[in-house]
Length: 123
Length: 461
Ligand SMILES: C[S@@+](CC[C@H](N)C(=O)[O-])C[C@H]1O[C@@H](n2cnc3c(N)ncnc32)[C@H](O)[C@@H]1O
Ligand SMILES: [Zn+2]
Image (cartoon, rainbow over all chains, first blue to last red; front, side, top):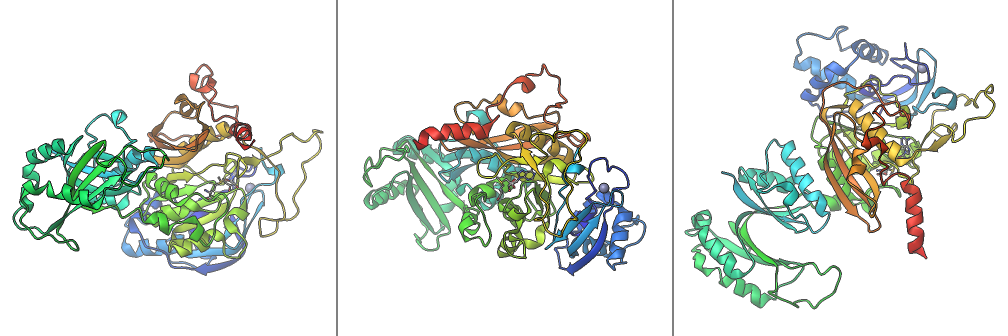
């Protein structure tokens, strides 16, 4: 759990933290690899939603360099498979995600991130 | 022209039948001809006759709709057997191809009644004019002809087994196409047999009906922002969808083991791979980076009876303006150490927020499927209007009746491809003009919690 597809969709949402609040930075993480069903149409359909640079950086940090630094124009099967692996098969089980802006720490335990805000962080 | 099919429904959740067949037809890209305006259909009866382009569509419905017991090619109906047989004789072209050389059997049964064996045989004999020449095969017939008598439901009144035999409301006759096979999922997803559940878990049948309302299918992305113990995660994922769940209370999703409870139960149903992620957050303070993400939201919002409706914040703001609210210690990697204060979240505000959130976070054409509890005597159709906004349209509204209260499964479709901002979750900051009756009308589900406890105190005495 906390797959990179999810990580790519989460931004810090603390009060007044509205710029430089994405992507969250991983810290002290433990990862697991688990196979997922490959659905090329789903992956292709999701491409426009992705923040590519954030995804590449996160993948690199976790040791996966299979993806090109720019989204390719030609989408072939191999690319989709690599993207599938990066988005859905790498699970962050422990550790934390930290906001690059306000430094809020979102801890992850047993694969579930705690995205709750503290009282002083809500509007 | 469309052929007519006789649908036999399970005798339960009658208001859910039409929305379910409509959803499954839409998901599979075909149309159902209801043969009369939908508002005029009598859903209280377990038999309905619809037009479909072909038999395959009937099979698709029988394999996916939880409430279908069987589908037949429709031959005849009648208030009496005389009427039935006359109609059936006029339909010879439909069944003459089975005369020559098709093995068959007859099944005679009744709704709300059991027909004595002797009369069952008489009923079969009275079809002898069909002059079917094929072999009668009770085990493996090529075709099964179905004759069902409908008796008026005595609503809990007991009567002798065969009492009033023959005194039926109507009789239907057709050729069996397919037994409903999705109904057995109700057993498969039985909450009591699940490795993880809680007192908020949704019963299996309803969780399945909800999943069908979302049009769950492989490659779809569905989320439940009040996921609790995950009842609807299993059913939507069963139909192939990817699933995200979140809850303000991490313990609901986790249970006691290290492996989160929702994952343990998902494992049992072989769908854990499709649970993309589970997250702890208050839906009114959510971390989604952008909108137009999901194909559907499926949820049973808290309405304050079993699981409190709450949100981050304080009931009464802290007094002196200068003092900072208490600061959490360095957060530890679980949900326990720092629990931020929460305040109650009134149901009608929650419902409106949920629709606004759905408009932001659903893809165009996406669906919001959720329960709204209502006080039976006070409910009015406009109650639903009070929570709508531009671009969101109610396409189904099915009551599950518990007597003095009930809950409505509402299906809302996002009918716009316009982009909307995320909602402010500010109960009073409605963006609609104040003279709009949908704003000034006070819906019966407002303050549901209070009404619930007042109403039920009477019954407890
Ligand atoms: C009726 S229960 C849902 C039960 C769920 N369908 C199941 O199968 O267990 C409502 C859930 O909403 C959660 N909840 C209440 N307020 C919330 C909020 N503001 N944001 C997110 N979750 C909330 C509660 O913790 C509870 O688990
Ligand atoms: Zn931040």
